[in-house]
View 1 (cartoon, rainbow, N blue to C red):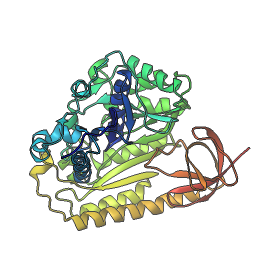
View 2 (tube, helix red, strand yellow):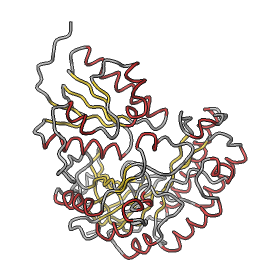
View 3 (tube, rainbow, N blue to C red):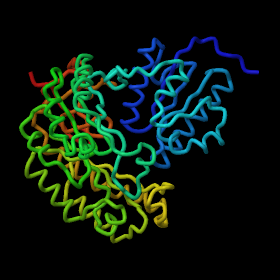
Length: 434
């Protein structure tokens, strides 16, 4: 018979998946703390909340394995209660309840008040922007909208997150001010689609007006844009990026593919010609801009010819940053009706080929930086190096700048002028310029 643990109620929040989940966990933790609860992030606690991801197969597998791991700990008396929330729980609650019934309760993505109640807390409406951030203290995610109205055939996000819903500008400014007061210097703006921001509230694409308000927040030095959609991009944002030093010359714009056949099947609402033209406009308007994109290979019907077209296009466009994913066949999406006819081996081989091309491009672009100086923020110390980033790099996904810690002492979260002395495909090495 299992014995109840003697630990008092310490709530451990575990986050899986994307930056939007990180943000949701931080909001949950802020609410719990305001209720006087003891809460930690991915440490020891006798009450566990697992914030799951349900996006693609690998992520779903990781989420299920994490739930099973904590059910084992519950069986063994190491934890008392396990609650599951987030996207996997939103999407598969009936299945999960059937297959893993000894979880104390499952909650979807919009059931925060119910989850808090189960944890013995009240939902406090007045807590605009009160979060317990889990990122290094110099940067934080700012989620400007929830959900998505785009009809992409391969994507299950609208099933889990619902329709697009913008957060009012004044709430986001309040949140940014509170983050800045806590030492945050870099805001990373996230949403399923930044470019859609404001259409529901203000009846127009209003990202530029939001940015104009955010740059006025004292203490914020960098504002970074993540997850823009290629159709209907609000070009006034580029004018602002060009003239406003706080807005990083950086844009994350997932393009997914370039073959017209596949773009049509993916329901992306664009073509190869339009996409190429858009990237050219970005580079003409803001020549310093770093563009990050992500691609999907192995989508149903992707022939060798389609793939070669994509590979050639990657060579031609020379993106500064690029990631590549293999297609995941997701039930209840539009593409699920198509035959998943590209084998996993071929998918993986194609992804590897794209990343090999990108690695060479990145190496060449990095070689050009040797001798140049950049403003660099220090995120952490690792081994004998301080690890930092330029405005052209987002945390966890992009290039890093390594500075020898045996020769120089640098403060985490501070900005320095660094001269690049060496370069690899995804790392720069530098020294401080006094």
